[in-house]
Image 1: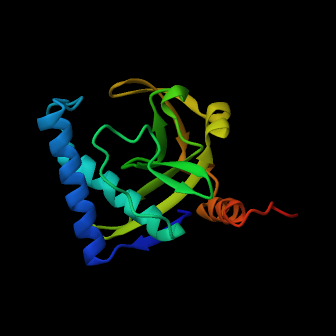
Image 2: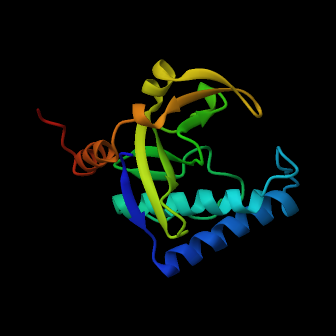
Length: 174
C-alpha cells in the first residue's frame, strides 16, 4: 500500500485519546448527539479520528488539532492556506455522504498501520474538485455515499509539495 507511516509518541497518543474522549463527551452528553449505529463505539471513532489528525499534523509539521465545541466545519487542519479534512478509515475507501459534505480544499485519508495504536499510515489525498469528478456512488451501511478508492488518491507527498509552495508564497515549477 502506498502512503507514509507516521508513529505518534506516547504523549501524542495520549493527547489524541484525550481529544477524542472530550469530543465524544461533548457530542453525546452536552450536545445530545447520538451515534448512527447504537451498537457502534462512538468513543473509539472519535479517538481514531483524533489519532489520524495528529498523524497528519505531525507529517506535515502543522499545528496540532484542537477541541472545537461547535464543530470544525469540515476543516480539521490548515497547510499553506489550504483547508484539510482528515478522514480515518478501516476500509480502502475515502467516503463522504455527498459532495456538499466535502467542505475542505483537500481530504487526507489515514488508516491504522498494524496493531500499535501509535502507528498510522497517511494513505493519500485528493482535492474537492477531483473527488467530485472521480468518486463513485456506492450503497453503504448508512445509505448511498460517494467513495473513492485509496489507490486512486494522490500520494501524501503531493500535498506537502503544494502546501509548502503556498506557505512560502511561490508557485510550482515544472
